[in-house]
Length: 549
Image (cartoon, rainbow, N blue to C red):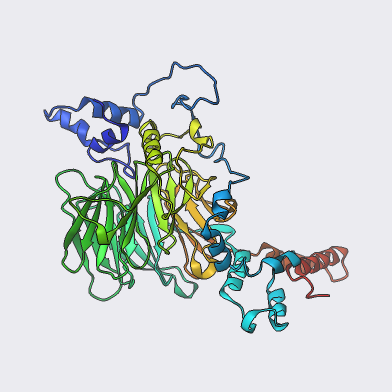
């Protein structure tokens, strides 16, 4: 007895996170073959599977009580996640990321100019350049990001259907010419996305898959991909070439049930970093073909790992203990692992981390229904770390099958929270939902975007904290999201068994074209036709002010 809820989960034959809680459990089978049953683990399993449930006797109706019944849950779709209308941006504006994003996204250089004009359009940009108001008489990268912001994805279309098999992973390659997806049917599919195509070019049958492929990663050169599942090894396979490579890379974790939840290649293509369900970080050396490092990193499952920048020396990790940790490979020792620092502020486990790529800032998604922005130069003190551990250890709900507790919906500032910004308005349930920075090339990393358990893709403006797009269309949880590195296209990977493509659609331009039926029926002298002509003119004048004067 005395085990924490998360530790009991880990003892449940390794079943956690993205594994289906409704499948037969090994620990229940052990009792039928004469082994000694683990009563606490069996009870925990029955509670989590919904076969037994405790009913609270508390009839209090205090809204301020943080100890409200865990049996009171609000569905993730009815009502939808609460959207924060006035996010607190005080700490963000005091951070240097504010000026950095303003500069990279073009909002700083165009700040005075945008006050003069109500809307920024291509004709106005051209006129400004010709009048000598643009430096070097050309569009800067910031100018292009400002224009691109006018064409953010605003519609979601399903483009691939896996016939009710849950899709788990979907990522673009660095050049955007290849898209890789992994589905519960144990197939990894490679699509050609160059020349405005989305064409299947290769299907790889995954090996040694226990529940599903849980993570995938491209090698830096784009020639190989690695994938992980509930297995003692990850697999490396080739993307191109006549000779197919499909090798198992063994991590040798021990006798316990093992899974790598998150993996990533180093920038020099020599190592693979992995985070596992045993609380350890693993580093596999591809040149020596063996595991070279095993770090006891977290008190619970390590759900996500990331390299901070292209040097591959600084590592980020996040786990079910609610903490984000920063590691330096140059000082890391397996026998005595000490992180450079720890960042605390989430009230529940971390599901995903994405780095801005500058070895300073990263974002994290959490089961506490928030997304946070962090600065690794502002580590948490011991008070904040202990407060996070205390709050996380008190959680008694299972996000895989239960709905979000009512107390989670309350805005709460944790003592010692060192995050720069907190974003609210999406829902984290069922699986390790991912969040990422938007691309540098097309947006200047102006946005962070995330999947949502309501079947949506949610895009936040980093500096205002507000939702600028909520792309709906999936009927189940969106687990993974990937923004094309150079185009305004987002691919969403959903548990409804589909891939969705979100892009920009100019609905006004579509309305400017008369319906085919109207063209054949109405003459140019018809009052209805004249009304439509006037509407077209108004639309054009709104889109291109001053051009038709």
